[in-house]
Structures are given as C-alpha cells and as structure tokens.
Length: 386
Image 1: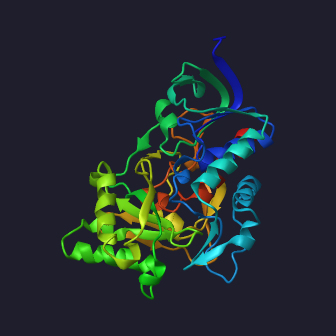
Image 2: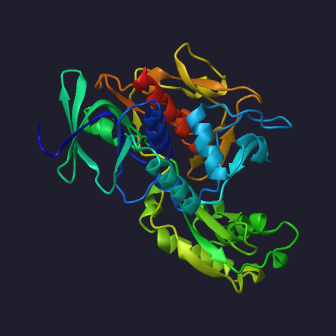
Image 3: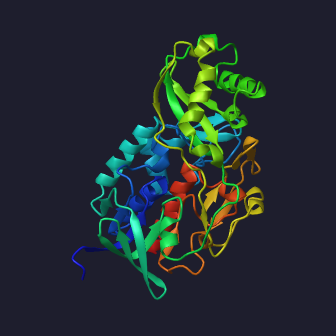
C-alpha cells in the first residue's frame, strides 16, 4: 500500500456546515472518518460574518416554531452553536423562524471543538482534493494536493460546488444566471438615533436606492442591507453582487460606503473589516438520479425515499430584482429524496450533500441555507452507515 495512503470508512470533502455535521454523525455512528478541507478553517462560507442566523430548521408560520425538522446530529450542533434549545431560542422574521447565533467566529469555534472531541475524526486541513480514481463503479482513491491519498469505503461531497463529484466524473450543471454573490463589511460607531424612525435596517437600502435613482450607483447596490450585531452601533453592511461585479467587490463596497458616510447616522462610523472574498451562493449542482424541481418545493411534495424535509422558501437572489421569496404553505414541508444525493452514473459509494445536491436553480434556492445543508450532511452520513 502507498505509505502515504490512509484508509477510512467515510471520507467527507468540505468542512462547511454540511461537512461538519456529516463527519460528526458518521463518527458518532462508529465510522472512521477523514474530513478533508481545502482551507485552514472549519465552517465554510458561513464563518465570514454575514451569517448570524441558522435558517431552514423549522416550518413557516405559527405562533411558535415547533420542533426542528431535522435529525439529532443537526439539532445537537445547533444547540451547542446557539447555547440552548433551538425551539426556545428561535425568533420569527416575517413568516420564517430563525435560530440566532453569535456569528462566524462562534461558528468556527464551535465546529473546531466538536470535531476535536471526536476521536474517530481525522481532520486534514488546507489540503484540497485534486483527483479521484474509480475502480469499476466505486470511488477508490481521493488524491490530495499534498500527495496524501485517502482510500474510503464511502465518500460524501460537501464542498458546496460538487468538487469531488466533478473529479470523479459526475455531471455537474452550472446555472446560466447564477444567484447574486454575497459580500460585505463590518461597521462600528453607527448612530441609530440619527437614522429616523425606520432605523438603520430601512435607512441603508433607502439611502442607496436614492443614489441609484440619481445615477450615482449601480442598481445592485440598492439591495444592500444592514444586519445589526448585539453591540450598539455595530453591524454588517451586506451587499449582493452580480457576476460582472464580483471581481470589483471591494470597489463596490467603497462606492456604497461613500454614500452612507454622507448620512448623519454613519458620519462618525468606521469600517472594522471586510469579508475576505465574495461569497458565491451558487456554483453548480450535481446531476443526480432525480432533479428536485420548483414545483416539488412549492407543492410540498414528499417522496418515498425522502431523507430530509425542508420548509425554507425559495430565496432567489436575482440581478435586477434583488432577493425574491416564494413560500410553501405555512406548516408544510417538502421532501428531498436520496436520489438527489446520488450522482447519476457516478461512483456507487459517493454521495453529494449540501448546496450542490441535484436540483433546478429555483429549487436549489430553497436548499442552500445552513439548517438544510446540515441536515443533508447528516442524511448522507446515515446512508453511509446503513
């Protein structure tokens, strides 16, 4: 055997929220797990400060959130991330229930603690998969950039971009018009009292929309929002960028900040930090044995082989419109079949979990939130253990 080869029961590629929960669920089920992460941190794009709520845990509507839709590994991780029972800490925003948590650093710290506590998990960080070798209908080896070879009995692609599935020869469909990317910067010393009765949450998009209407800003900057933190006067300005503006993300942020600084509420405010890089909401979806459709989601369709149930609305970030929501009926949920996790014609021992599962772009816009990605990772791990 190659001296740099490592055998395991389950290899998980990608240590974002789907991969973290997949690895934890598999390890707690007795599997020897290798968790492969291309960066040096756990948590994926959710650690960069723009995420402060776990979405997709509950049904919509109602006076109370009810029990979370998902399995024990997802609930346990969310409980430890939020510091309490999710159904007791959930807050309602419009028709949906959200679980607040303390932001990206808290997520990374929670993930690191949970992974380190599991003796059955071997974490390989800052070492992306660069090749995948098949033996017949099975994935036999995953080659990493360092030269290490992982030989898994089962594998789960939680990269969010179906990167391992691509290496293994599975078909991945890329959307013709991908969702708007996220970007943003953290601000301190804003003065809410000078924002008027609507507050900063409405003042920020209003001020930027005025600048757009005056021809001073690109229209997509009017979709920017204010997400407050627990510290008075501190929060995130969150931008949504089309493909053609992603390469100029910092410049776009500077344009928006220049307009906001002229307002009394931000006259003495300062930027604490920027997101390191634009965050893609959508890169591609594996072509699975079944492709989940928009009608499946909005019609709350169930499936005999459903492994996850989801009630999050279709949340589309569209150029020229911003964010557009389409909701399932209150109290209902749709199923996500195991066939959406199985690459069509791919290795029999490889599943895809998280944002890149098999779905039409509209349907995928309901699946890529943290709670659903965690649940998909847990479901994939359960199938590997079966």
